[in-house]
Image (cartoon, rainbow, N blue to C red; front, side, top):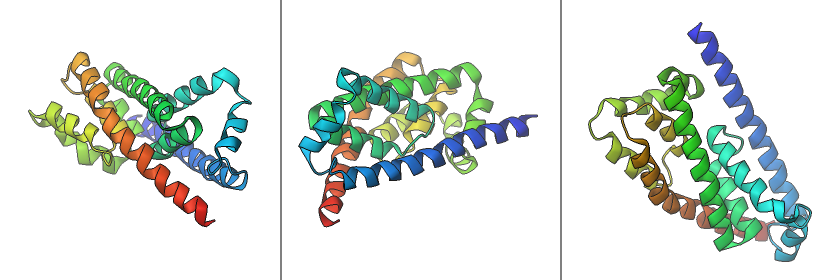
Amino acid sequence: MEQVQRMKWNVLVNGSAFIGLVLTVLAFIYGIQTHIFTSQTAMETFLRRFGWFAPFIFIIFQAVQVVLPISPGGLGCVGGVLAFGAVQGFIYNYIGICIGSIAAFLLSRRYGINFVRNISKKETFDKYAGWLQKPGFEKAFAIAIFMPVAPDDFLCYLAGVSKIKFEKFIMIILLGKPCAIAAYSFGLTLIIKHLSALL
């Protein structure tokens, strides 16, 4: 029964990740062809279609992609900066990702370790599950959240089944996320703009 449940979650997670990746690639191609990624005027024209809902739509998207991998998180950060500018994009990224991280924590705290195992890739779960047995989980978790290369979304799920207090989790997320978000947002934005200029 547990194996069947795990397969269902894997289909959901992997399916949403694949669909999200395809949509991301198509959106990137569309953005290049319409100059959305290279022209501030084109970007502003595109965003006017959504009016004042645009920031809220983006924040919700960023929150959801933490819980379900709709698209690679780093690309979402880049999208925020390209769409809203460096400062506003960073803020919207921060709000959305923090909301999603808290949601992931609460989901795993509510449904337990089997839930985390079922929605995770086996390799990722096996690699990091051992952290739960170590007395320094909070320290390791905090360091990982500060680093832009750690699997943050999974670690938020893992934190939910650890002994870390909700208040401590919130503090680590609020203080640690800006570093990783800034690295993704501005680092990848420069790379994409450079690639766009070459195409």
